[in-house]
Length: 566
Image (tube, rainbow, N blue to C red):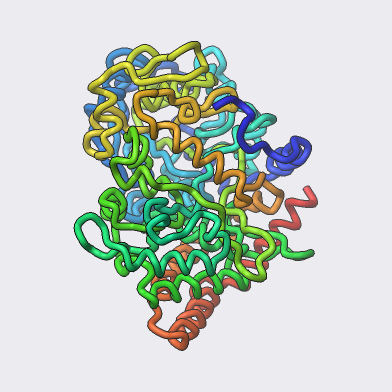
């Protein structure tokens, strides 16, 4: 897929304003904490190899993952380039809960990588168990890749004392010409089931049409003779308000879920925060209606990710809503034709809801870093950590593929020319990599693309040219189509609101997430209209009593006003 064919940001001038606004905002922190936590790093800078330690370090991942520390890619890192052994450790269960437990029981060993989060940042700084790292961006002779990180990203990360508390990763190397991102929040239909129902994609243009299809799909059976599950989605316990499958339904109802620490969108002349959008309730009323009508998988609330994928692979589901990555792209990518149910998956436009004029944004294009690597003040391997990150953050267009799959020529190679199409060149690596089995995949790669960076010159999964599988191009085609459906927009100023250090947002954002996860299941599983209304009122009461919603909202608007003034 050629550069520029897919979605483009609507205006570089708007992006420039966003960057300017973002660069002007910093998070303050306790000055004593700053001084104490930077001491070890400063001594290392002064004393050269004194704090070098061994060429090995432990990297704690802020998400669940299948780990195999003997993977081929990790073996390459250790034995060839950059000559460092990286021992990975995954998180079990909720990431923020695991973080607080870890910090309260001695901290992590060497380094930790988390998706960018004000909650995580505040917890790390408050713990006084991490070092500030601003000096490492000013050592071009020793760490040229760290020195090449766009300055607007680093300026935005500074606290009131000028300290930076993490190494940013997964950012666009060219903020003035950003890559548009993967769009995957969608409605995904099985076209074979649709055809048997006597319907076409055009019949799914409205929510009423979708409901009609789900009723007809419920009458069909899978290959084992079991009735099909009309609609399903994944309720992952590790998801967030900005990234979960229900957001595709919320988008359909006009609710914006992508963007800042609390998603917001302009409704007329007013900015409306996520939980105050009346359509938020309407979306969950519809999901509850489908659940009570037996048109949603009855196990949707309790199913784990692997079970969800198994049902889709077995052809048990007629329609999915949410990220097609959760369904599992290997279901179609490994096929040559209509030999398995996965071949028939197709993205369709968001159905029209009466009274909704505009889709809510579920994906916001933001070139700023998406992940942060924090360094323990007790680590004796700081030099190894920085050397490794300097390797992962080389500002090359193909670097994310190098980190994910090893260097070009090892397990993969160009088909025609550099920055063109590519394919796997190691048959055993490819077999395990594309097996669809987490344990097999973990034998070859830990998939740590998020500790690298990217740009718009070349993106690997738009250029995967393995021609022997007809389904291999479908994922890129899906994301291109979804990106043009209306649920994707560029970053706007209100997406950049930050929590004030020590303020209410910082304090209550974790509880907001707890409440969202607790009540989404209760709302969906309500057994009557009356119980739904009672649950909804309990949800609103919990927002006020447990997360002080009105006060949090007031602080958000104060932070927004301050941002606009700056």
